Amino acid sequence: MTNKFISLFAITLSLIILTACGTSTRRIDAKSNEGLVTIDNINFKDWQIAAEKGINSLLASGVLNRADNRKTILMISTVRNSTSEHIDTRILTDKIRYALLRSGKAITTTAIGGNGADDIASRQVRGLAEDDMFNQSTVKKAGTAIAPDMSLSGEIVQQQASSGRVRESYFFFHMALTDLETGLAIWEENVEISKQTKRPVFGW
Image 1 (tube, rainbow, N blue to C red):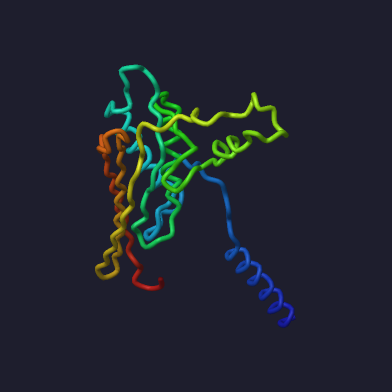
Image 2: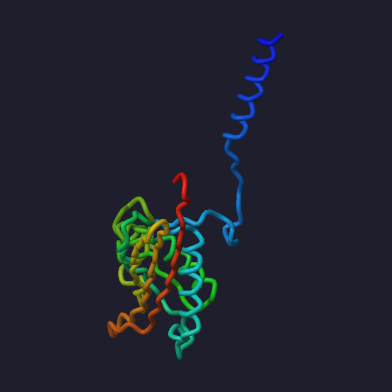
């Protein structure tokens, strides 16, 4: 009887442990304040904060307004990653590009960019000239692509510090808009994000 009780107890204990160690995965709203706050990395909320502040500042500055009411043609230049982490800066630039397009103030070109064209089709289709497979009247001609008026560039910097059980990360997002005719930066914005964590007395 005792052996049966011990076996039953062992099985029950094993099930409890397995249940406690199980993972629970769920979807969260990417626009909410839910989600993990990472100390060493930029998480989705940090990207959201940086993009929203940059967009609001740029639109409020009025530099995209034109006397001829034409939409500004914008190219995405380089956003330098000066942090110790491997990060995809396109998360930031794509958020800004999408918001500017929706604002009606600017259109972005994908035919040219700081890291090369986002879409090489604009150049490829012009290579169809004299290709007898294609109706030449439908082939896009040379000299018709529209050059950008301005370029968006930036840099992300990270600093880390620790004191006792406390660690802190500071992320600095710098964004600039350059008038390509004059080469002058006509708008700049800095977004700062600081995060802090405290290691427990016991454990990690």
